Length: 319
Figure 1 (spheres, rainbow, N blue to C red):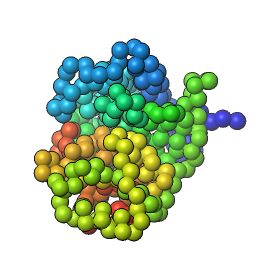
Figure 2 (cartoon, helix red, strand yellow):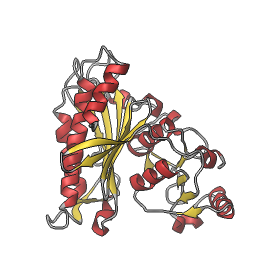
Figure 3 (cartoon, rainbow, N blue to C red):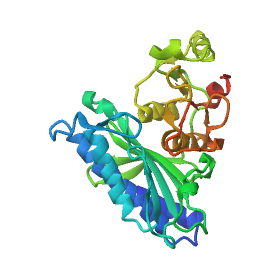
Figure 4 (spheres, one colour):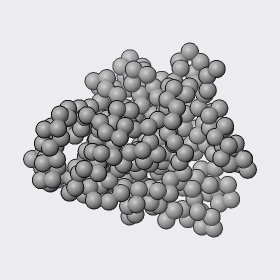
């Protein structure tokens, strides 16, 4: 018999939290509904005039794609109506959406609605990344401080990969599980049980066109990997590159550069959720000198260098 993501969430909730009231599983159902809405639009993007720029610029200074806008609206709608949500933070919006739910809003959800959306034009995989934090008790409706929590305080994180098949991968701190969308029944079905990242891989992933702009330790390490027989694979879509690394092992780099000395990937809604997944699968994630999940954020759109992958490769690098 198949196991859907909703069944799996309910089973895990009963096993680990028998006192739970089902609010967390109802919250995750909002994420899966939004993912299916986004997936349906991606499949029809070329014929529904959803390819290309929407004409706006987001808070990151990046051109918004039409699907960025749609994905953001889908997530805000599907999650905003869940009364367990205290705040929503999106890559596409400068400020958080904070709800007046002092007594019922338990969760803060941070997300990148459509990572890699510029690749839609050339039919390359893209993804949605999300992170869930618990709102500390006793803070009323002032959740601004609660948003800036270290990644190790996440209670759940995951991503949806839109590709030849659509996959949801998530963790609640007790292993990593993957679900593939079955279009015949419209449900995410368990396909990857207890995912474990290999201790060592054979591939490193980085945009080597920027090598001249990286600190010297990075190209030196890449050269050492090549001498050891490693291959280079870089898709340029974070979720796709990480998904390969999660299943096959190896290491993904997004180093600092002269133009972005503090890194370019966002800590709260890119690095933290993927780092949580990697560690739950037996991998590692650092900023080159510190564990990503122990970085204290100072801003919701804070950036960071990022190194993530198998323990052998990540621990072998020193900046």
